[in-house]
Length: 343
Image 1 (cartoon, helix red, strand yellow):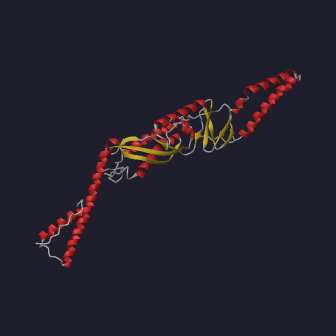
Image 2 (cartoon, helix red, strand yellow):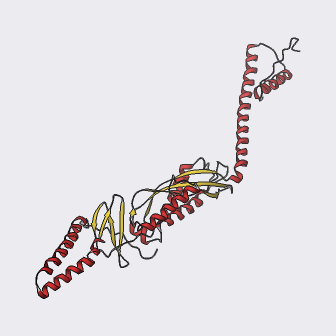
Image 3 (tube, helix red, strand yellow):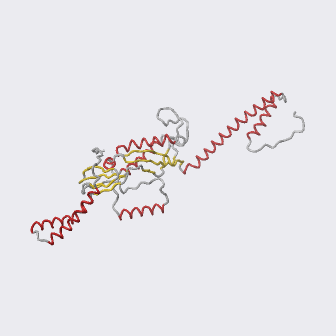
């Protein structure tokens, strides 16, 4: 950043209505004056009066350039011959120096907002409409002070384990200092978009996609259970803080940040899905086996307590084997009726 420019709020300028009436009255007076002076004989004084009236009729429209209208949540940064003179804020009808020019280098920059369609045909139609509107009217130099949403496109980033993932983040932001936003950076909207992309990459590479052992995501030297999928709020807050650190000098406040899309990249998505399915099957089998062992143990204990049947170690082993097969099998067991002796 070069020379720091502080925001200067222009006050006492809400006199646009009175100035509009005055400028219109002066036009009427000039026209009537020319007619009256031309009908009479006022000599040299009359000639000077006619000249003044003609000059005002020719150049009086310049005064109308000083009339500015703002709606709630809008601001106007004004410069006079390249020098910053102040910012108009608040809704109302203002009158400023007619030679002041509104300055906003990001006036024509359109950021992708959440909810925009990604369809190519629709996007081309919208782009054409924006181009036609820009050609038919002057660009709007007003700066919005409302909370806006920046939804950057999906990025492919490697997590801490090197796995490629796709992530998209929606950032809610607003301009808090118009002078910094306009003069501290070349284009504050493009600057914000670039910082969002950079922050997402810097934060995502610190986390694994899923919980992984021996990974330190907090920087304290100890392994933790942080992950992109399981610690969404924490990751989003870290992204928000990193963006805020970068854009403070541009007069921008980050209100909130949210992860809107998170998935493995297509080239490894199928393999990771199979890995997750295998892990789920293993976990399920482990749970089934633990339950089956408990049931077998309970059955043997109950048989022993009730003294229903006396089993030696060999037959206990056979019984345990049969019960485990029945309880852990994928299919229903087919009963076999033994009509003979147990031995």
